[in-house]
Each structure stands twice: as C-alpha cells, then as structure tokens.
Image 1 (tube, rainbow, N blue to C red):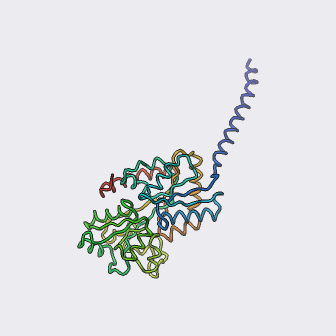
Image 2: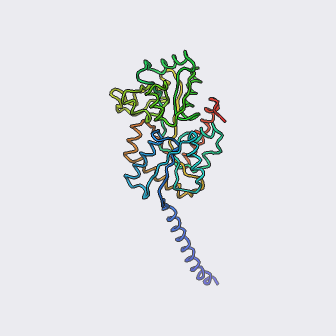
Image 3: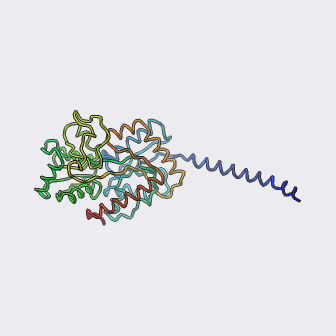
Amino acid sequence: MHAAIIKSSKPIRAVAAAAISLLALSGAAQADWAPTKAIEFVVPFSPGGASDQMARVIQAAITKHELVKVPIVIQNKAGASGAEGILDVKGAAKDAHKVLVASTGIFTVPMATGLPFNWKDLTPVGMVAQDEFVLWVNATTPYKTSAEYIADVKKNPGKFKMGGTSSKREDQVITAEVEHKTGAKFTYIPYKGGGEASTQLVGKHIDSNPNNPSESIAQWRAGQVRALCLFSDKRSSYSTKVTDSQSWADIPTCKEQGLDVSYNMLRGFFLPGGVSADQSKFYQDLLTKVVETPEFKEYLEKNALRPDFMVGQKFVDFLKQDEARHAEIMKTAGFMK
C-alpha cells in the first residue's frame, strides 16, 4: 500500500513540475512586455516651457540610445492650465502607450479648479528630478537683490507685474508666498508657458517672473534678464559658468537675502489607470536607463535641476507628502476651490 502511494505520486510530481515551468514561462513573458506602437508623451504645457524641454531631451536620449523599439511622439495639451493634458491621460485607462509628463500641477490644478481628478486616478511611474525657481527681472532695471526689488513693490501695491505660467499654478503659488511673507502686492499675469513669460519679461511687458532656470537660460546668457535669487533651501550645486561671470551656484538663495520662500517642483511620469504591473515596470526600467544617459545628465546641469530619481513605492510616498504640502500652500494663498 505504501509503495503504491509512492509510485502514484510520480505523475503528480511531474504535473506539478510542468505547471511550475508554465508559470515561470508566463511570468517571463509578462516581464518582457514592450510597447507595440508609438508612445505618446502628453505634455500639459505649451511648447518651449520647462516640461516640454525635458520631454524632448528624454525623447532624444531614448531615440539615440535605442532604449525602445517604437517612436516617441510628444503632444502638447496646455488648455485650461494643463487640465486638457491631465484629463486626456485620465481618459485613456489601460492604455500603456500614453504617458503624462507631470509637474506639481497634478496637485494644484484639481485643487484650484475643482477638476474631477486625483493623481491616484493614474499610475505613478517615477520622478526624474525636481525643478528650481529663480526670481528674474529685466537686466535694464537697477535691482541687484530681491530685497531691493521687494522694497519698491511694497511702495507701489499692485503696480508691479509678476508674470508666470497659468493661473494658480507653481508660479502664482510662489508669487502668493512672496506676498504672504513680505506684505508686497503684485498684479499677476498668467501665460501659457514659461517660455512666453520670459519673452514678455525681456519686452518689459511684466516686471518680474519666478521662472524655472531652463525657461530663462537663453535670455540670461544674452544679458537680457537678471537672476535676483533662487527659491530653494540651498544654492545650486552647478558651478560651471553659464554667463560670462555667473554660474547657477553663484545665484544666492532668496532666504540669504531675507526672503524666506522656498519651492521645488517635481518632474514625474504617470501612466493611465488600469495598466498592468509589468507595463508600469517597463517604464520604470526605461526611466532608470534614461537618467543614466549623458544627455540627461547634461540637461540637468545645464538647466539647474536638482537630481532626485525615484520609482515605485518611494515615489508614491513622495506624492502623498507633496500633495499634503501643496494643500496647505494653496489654502494659505486662497486658491482652493
């Protein structure tokens, strides 16, 4: 009887082994998921802005190093302060060929507008960096520090125009923080993107803007704008000269000049909701390769972005904390819908 039991267990073991092999093969097949058509990078900003520039640098790096076998197509959908692009990706559930190139607008737009959206509607992939912000003025003005500039703004409430990307987004949030901390009062002028805002500053249609470094680097190098201070808790680490006399590291923090305002913006990627874990993993692995390319590293330094790469649960935890931080900032500014 005992021997019979042992004998009969052999085919059972064989079946079990075959099943395990099939599962392993199935798992390997799933892990090898790859896109079968063009990948669409949806940028909820106009062409020329910081998000658009980053998307195009990553597009070029992926193409040059053949990191995927399909084309990368960039779609700019900047309508309604970026809501157009966000809702486009939200509405593409289970489509792993559509990727949102996101900033902190993923929090601020729904908070400010009542948009029926939360970042949890999407699938977080990863963050590749955090963007800095600089207080810029036209180079023909006499201001050399933020303290000098703010002193004049306080003497003339509402006269000075601060321009930035969209309404109740990062640039206006920073403006509101400056007003809250100093008692100054600006007239805020919204534009479709940071590139347009920088052009308007050069043309003297506005008096200042809190632009990302990448959106004003050409004007800074040309001597058309002046960097007063960096809205950060520490100076930039990039010491290579950008202008004839200054590097990003030479720009003092606003706090050094008595303006206690600090703000950084995430640069992240999201897939629509409903995609598989293997599809998300494909893009996590892709970003891991992208951030190691010479082109991306050069882009970070050239545009003074703070390197901060994370994927998976670490990125999700960051999003939860950053969402809470923005809820407090938006509430203080009176921007909550």
